[in-house]
Image 1 (tube, one colour):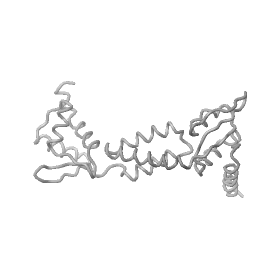
Image 2 (cartoon, rainbow, N blue to C red):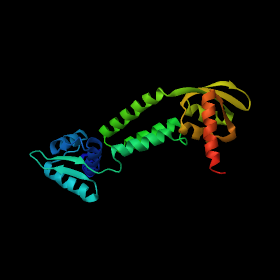
Image 3 (cartoon, one colour):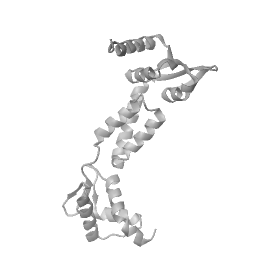
Length: 216
């Protein structure tokens, strides 16, 4: 890209740098902004940068400036706060309607809505939660129609086909046996059956009765 083209894109790159590199705990000075733009082969001077920041603020980007000997800037209000991102990400990961691989891709997209530091904090939080949930995993066995095998294997941790016949297969795996799992299993209807263990089957039956009782 030519220097002239880079200059035309300077506002966009400046916005990207501020969104990715700053938040309530991380700020950048004007000199640091100039250096980061220089890494992208975009020359910038202090005066022009002040004008660019003012333009982005007028456009609606919430840039908070702290006036001092070395003025510092950061992004203030975002579409989501970090706690809100964590809440949405956890809901996506626990959703019975979303497969695990798709859920992970959605979480990565959510992480991009914060700064890179917030994205790292979000991933660390979800990783810690994943380890906590690993302690709650229990083995299960399901029999389902072969058309559901890919979805079941994707949902279960360590899922594998134990037996397979022309119409149905038996699948083993581990799962956190909670309401999210029961809701997902209930949604599969008559095409899937939980065959073990007995205590999980018993809890699932209770869940089904509770749902059906709402329609009496």
